[in-house]
Image (cartoon, rainbow, N blue to C red):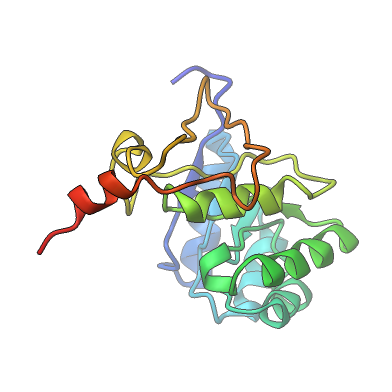
Length: 188
């Protein structure tokens, strides 16, 4: 990887407070751009301890299911970076509430989106409205497989080019299913 590519580390909610602090210090020394989900998502007081002890930015929030939970996360855990997931949070309207709160509280946002297709595009469209959007939006093949396979399901697929996605200006998300490709993908 080139030196100018920021790297993150995802603990998947797996550490205790002392272990997260120890690992976070190591990650900070290595120049890691963010330390994702160091603790179980319900441990807001523990998260605050970790955030207060580390210089490495802490990111979390993908597990939250409402703007109210994100509000509590901000107030009690105070992470450096919020990572709401449009599917977990309940769709475009709820994620927009989260983004408004984040902007009002000067929080950095880095959306979580481990699915390619309509989910990522809905998330990208919402994120494109955020005035302080400085972090890249996740575009992951983790749960859907290769982007090209998903792209085949749409008449005018949207694929990253040089690490960027140009959002369509067509109605809705700018996607139209290819009925023939969808029918061919269905397993009886």
